[in-house]
Length: 109
Image 1: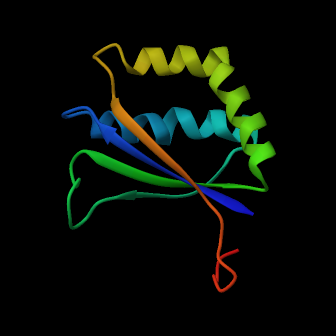
Image 2 (image 1 turned 90 degrees about the vertical axis):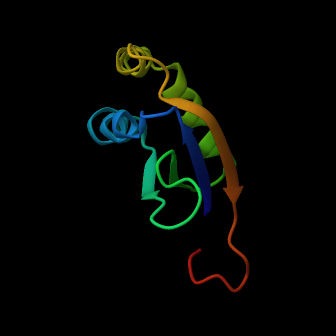
């Protein structure tokens, strides 16, 4: 099992739009593609509180991640929905992602 930590730096004032897109659009597309979201986080204390979103995805392996993520990115319905949500301008300014694997002593495997 591996996890992917994705960190989104959001365009100024666009965090509510990003939350809305995940809650009402993106998660439905992920469900169709078999993408498993583990958790989403806002920053409560520290840098990035009003412009950064963190979330974690779970994958069996890198091959599953590559196949499902590519299919999601190529999905015309997702592309259309994403474009619709960005009519007022881009929501995400920068994306960072890390593929994580548990250590031998990690409680979460």
